[in-house]
Length: 200
Image 1 (cartoon, helix red, strand yellow):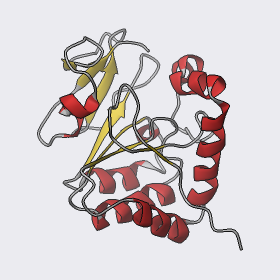
Image 2: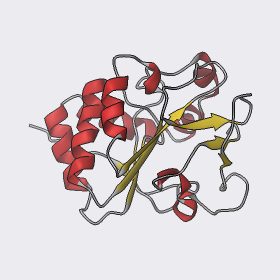
Image 3: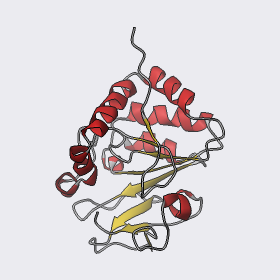
Image 4: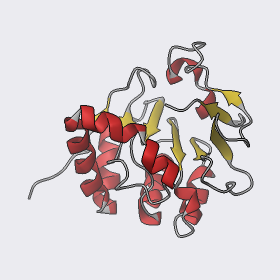
């Protein structure tokens, strides 16, 4: 039997030296709006670097078997890892998948996990996301765009600057005030608020 292991990204220019886990764009994004599908930045870099799409598709296949996925991720995430970004590409594809992350996050209490998600807009997935974001070391921001309604009460929101509802701290990396997410850390620190991104 072939045992799949997850492909963990070793950071990006934007994120900095923070490991990442991703899934293929669009295919794993049930909460994507028409605006999001049209302007998806992850789809653009998957076209430029086809190997990314291959790696993300491998992660997707692994994620379909929840027990194997949880076990494989725990083998790959050191107990002393300080941060992990969930989904540079892709999103929480189902409630079962979100609950897999719940188990992973619970088993790595010293790691700060963070993700931006549009899956809050899928009623069948929202309860699992609420459970996940209730964990102290998991920071989920409801990603929205002008085609989407307001997220549920209590959520931190990741707005686009083209959205008339946008309010929050502008992304310091995009404004040249921080070299990376690793330097800023606003989005994955407890007690912080909304963030506003420029379209990218």
